[in-house]
Image (tube, rainbow, N blue to C red; front, side):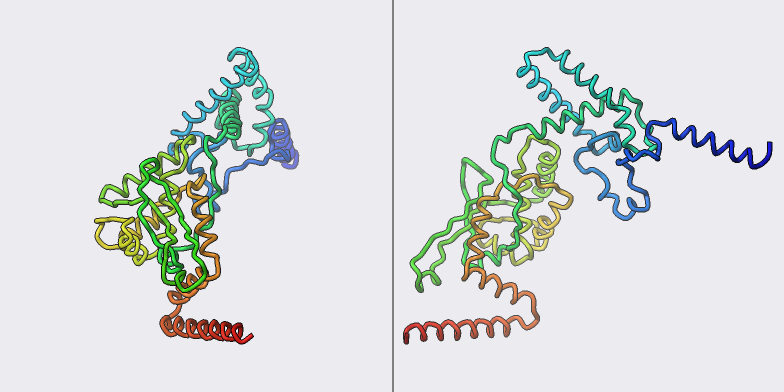
Length: 343
């Protein structure tokens, strides 16, 4: 056989073999691919599920196996509720579901890259049933309590105090993690500048050597258990935003809402600035109270005081800048009052 014929025959066999595969690369169905190593090496964590995997690609990742039991629990709840609503037995419902999935396995496999051969059709169908039921139950499951959106928290403790808010210890026996913002309204006048009765109550936290480990384990539990609300995670998230520097720690200690024996205040700062790294916050427990605080801080006087404090911290000419700003503001204020009185 001539060289040309040999090459042609080899190419023909390869093309026929590829075209006979249900998920060959010519199909436009291929939409799920593994991230190339050249990209994954740049930031492996960006392409790896942290809590739960959906589908077969990360099914056997060791750090995700704990969630597989929760998937089965969700699947059972979905089937159990379907049994109650349809008056059919579990055998009928599960068999019908499996039959429907098996009828779609070939089409589902075609969505993956041709190199995906990790599971046979029966195992892939099992994964599809479990993961599909998990997603449906997760979307359906009613929330026992209202879940709040995650707000943008941009004020540190020192900035909040500078805006006229006091930190006070919250001692609510019915809710140990409760946070309360109390805004007292005064008749406009000098008393509103001298008396500060607006307060932000937060739980007292006593930090011991075992506290970092305790908090991290509680946060990990909330990350791994889908039915749990993020109470501890929300509290850690709140403290992370309130504590920006050692000055924030010292302020909270003086306000008697924070106690610690870790040594330097920088140790507490480091604890809260790193404890939420890699953590997913599904819902923020303190949304309502933080919204009230945010509305207060955006009012005229508080927003000016916060801006001045930030300006003070962000420049090498701190004292002179603040003094100049205050003088200009005072002169403008007195001039306005004088003009109004003359009119």
